[in-house]
Image (cartoon, rainbow, N blue to C red; front, side, top):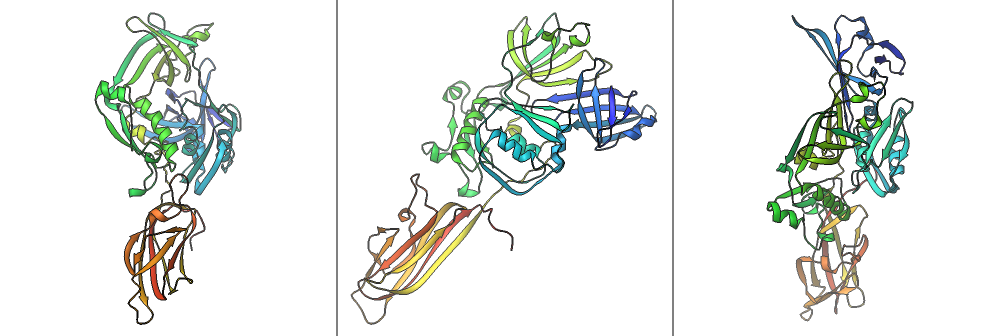
Length: 485
């Protein structure tokens, strides 16, 4: 039965003349529904964009709740119909934007999900269950909707996960669970299998990747600092088997080299093997018998044992479930098992907007910092030049000192001055320097990065001198501080 509902989910009509009713469910994505109505059916007035339709099949199995999206009216000598498309109710999370920057640090998976659900303007969704308890830092900026931020939360897990939702209750319930690993159903030649297709696709093979994160130019995050100075990851066994196949993998959301490397390792493991995809057409036997067996239930997320004459047995999880005619041919079901077909491009831009949602990443900018000082210096009265690197400076690219020291009166004995940078004394310098690199003398952290905070340059001379000095630093800033004034 296909039912129309208004915005408050009150039933308004039974769409008993609907035909060509089809649906598609895809793992960890928003599914869809399509159906057609006669153009002259008076119940079309109850079907409006952004309102609801609910699908239950003839055996009273609940399929889902969908929001009506585009409609197409077609009338000619052969057609007199309206075609409707709808998307699963999870699309309502796209109604709320994340304006500005939102960052949560060291939060569990459950806390991160709840943070986003709390942003809903209309509280359609609540969290029912979360099987994961990772502590991670997340940052989202100017997101058109909550769907992609939500889907990004488990994206870095090295284990599989499954989003599930229940729209038979309100508020709707959302869960993030560990998918099953043991088969509970079967597809077998000569029993319920109508046909199958296996595709091994080597076009997606990669065995060496160069991971890059956020930033620009020389400031782009890479893995050298956590990978013994090597900018790439590789699988030598796969290189020996297939030859060297390289790719640059860019994920702007990573600003931490360690997290970038961990995620890249997981992706490399997937890309070093040809993608294997099974497309199976089967009989949905639970729609044909009065006493259906649980072993014949073929639904999204279920692990299936596939038994074939030529290829033996293999256990795969259903990644995609669809029916082309729910009421006309309820027994015909199409399944995709294992890895869904993806291109390298779509995989590497997995966080680009799908479900008609756009995305903006937080980037930074390279800036020049200029610090100058003038003053009289001597052996007992140094001149100090202070530098301050704020916490929102991600990288210090260059630090160059230029100065000129002149005697206050007639003098021929002073040819050098002393310079101390953060307590480190440099070799004696001549009275004039142009763009002297002082990066190696600035105080650093244990991992070799220049410390954020104050740094001091002290100039000394055995005789009074007049000093004119400046330091120019190129820094990469990613700031979320203050306003726009």
